[in-house]
Length: 500
Ligand SMILES: Cc1cc2nc3c(=O)[nH]c(=O)nc-3n(C[C@H](O)[C@H](O)[C@H](O)COP(=O)(O)OP(=O)(O)OC[C@H]3O[C@@H](n4cnc5c(N)ncnc54)[C@H](O)[C@@H]3O)c2cc1C
Image: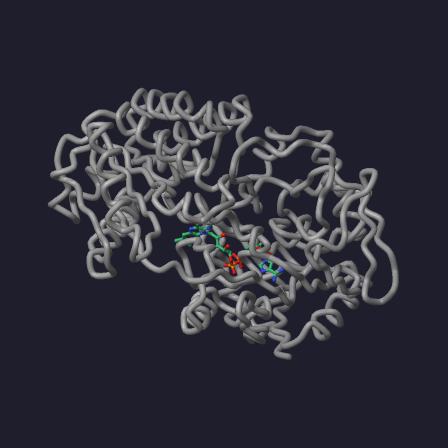
């Protein structure tokens, strides 16, 4: 195991994709096995030294940034141990890009795709990462079948989905060493959104494994993961479709979403779903996003209210029928079909990819020019609240006069509004506006974070969402696993909740 203490060796481990500054640590450990991690944790726990878990540090909320103590990097636990017909067993430090390559080579499919493939599988489990195809396939949680975990005191857990459940509000976790952790589960209800990464997952019939997925390193260190794999889809059709009127666009999304959900409810016979609409992704670009993209992509039609990027899986026998179905739906909702782009093979897809890529590139260039940080939202709301939430976003953003773009996972009612302040005064107002969006989302029964998690940057907003009582319940749960509160200090809730 490598142990490093020199400033220059630690430097890369003090930041992540959040650009949060001020991180510092005393020692960096790069262990090669769960046993080595257990040894570090036994010593840290006895001496009450804070420990921060470092994945690939692609997280956007400062979760992997240490403020003192030890850093444990999972980078050397990077073995893909097995890929079977419908499962993969990996160590936590395996990069998503390496797993995707190995799975693809076996003709299989691992759906979670949080855009940034340089992340580690352990990091994606710890943040319950999701992405565009989560509309059809759900978040990382849906694919986690078994976890191996090292707890704060060095004891270990092995949890398999479907084996251990909450009973009368408690879960009794047997450790590998033969002790029992009797954990009271939080009593709040999950928001009625399809995606949520705010706080611990809970439900009255909680499967114990779900408590650790999305726990952002606060309950234990994930060392090994068994993932479910699916057969690879055969073909697809896809399009970027432009609309002159936003109402048409929203009506199309509603109908495509409704039919996709109905299709997924049909279990048997398979022929019944053969020619039905079932989008695997439904993504949105608002008019401001299209303006940004047109800087890099001049073919973008002008004066459009927005665009939808959709994808549907196909096979040899339903490709034509499904193309016809989508065409009918687009015509019905007045899409600008002649000016839109469609793809049925990998080559055509290049254009779609370039189009999607143009947005973050242009936004980031603007951020650099403005010398201000962008402020990006990650909220999602229930289906029936989405239209008014989008209206609220737009009204407040237009009133503010601050430059912005809105884009993202409209199928899941989960959009990212990126505010791009030009100066300190605008930056201050943008932060205030962010707070208004948080309050509005919470008021509508939504979540403050649908995919990026809470980390250190959003913990005050978690308080807005759940309040004192439920944060105390989360803190009690954490203390059961980590009585000295050494693991991932500062993630999810303020240390005052952990004081004994
Ligand atoms: C350009 C870009 C686009 C992104 N797009 C998306 C997106 O579409 N959807 C999405 O969900 N996310 C997205 N993300 C962020 C996403 O959270 C990360 O990509 C990923 O899930 C984190 O993995 P990581 O290995 O980098 O973890 P880190 O950033 O290193 O850590 C994240 C958190 O998990 C904890 N952690 C890491 N490994 C472990 C472990 N083995 N055991 C316990 N805790 C651990 C850390 O302590 C930290 O709290 C994006 C990030 C970038 C930079």
